Image 1 (cartoon, rainbow, N blue to C red):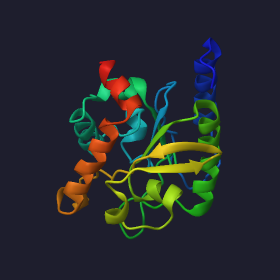
Image 2 (cartoon, helix red, strand yellow; image 1 turned 90 degrees about the vertical axis):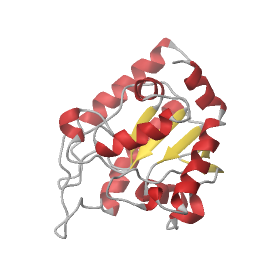
Image 3 (cartoon, rainbow, N blue to C red; image 1 turned 90 degrees about the horizontal axis):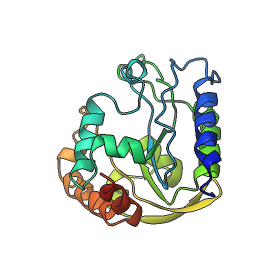
Image 4 (cartoon, rainbow, N blue to C red; image 1 turned 180 degrees about the horizontal axis):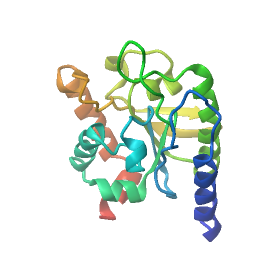
Length: 208
C-alpha cells in the first residue's frame, strides 16, 4: 500500500464504518476496535470481553495485562504497541454469555460477517506479520488444531489475498492455565522469541 497522506484517512474511515456495524443481532455492542494505525504488524484477538466495550479498546482488561507483559518482555510496552500495531479480532463485538457459563463462542455466520471487515483491512494494510491470539483466531488460518502443535512456530501463509508471516500465540486469559504450564510455557517463550526476531517488530521496539 502506498504510504500517502490518504492512507491513514482510509483506515480511519474504515474504522468509523466498522463502528456502525449491526450485522449480528446476538452480538452485544459497542463495536470494539484499536486505533487507526498504518502498520505491517496485525494482531487478531478472538472477540472482546464484557469490559472492553466500556473501556473502548481491545485487550483492556485482565487478559490484556498478561498479553502486554508478554510483549513488554520482548521490547514493546503497551502504549508503543497500541500506537504501532493494528489490533483486530475474529469478531469485534462481545458475543454475550453462554447458557452454560462463560462467554458465548461466535457462530459461523458471525465470524463470516466480521471477516468481511478483516478482508478490507488486509486490502488496506497488506500486513507482513500476523499474530493470531487464542484458539478461535488461530483456527481462522489453520483450521482445527492443537495449541501444542502450532504455538512456538512460524509459518509463511496466504489468506485474504495476501502472503505474510504468521506466529500464533495462546490466549492470555486468566481462566486458562495452558500458557502457565508445560509444554505451553516453553512454547509461548519460543513464539515470543520468533516475534522478537521479526524486522517489523524490531522497528517498533526501536520506536519507543
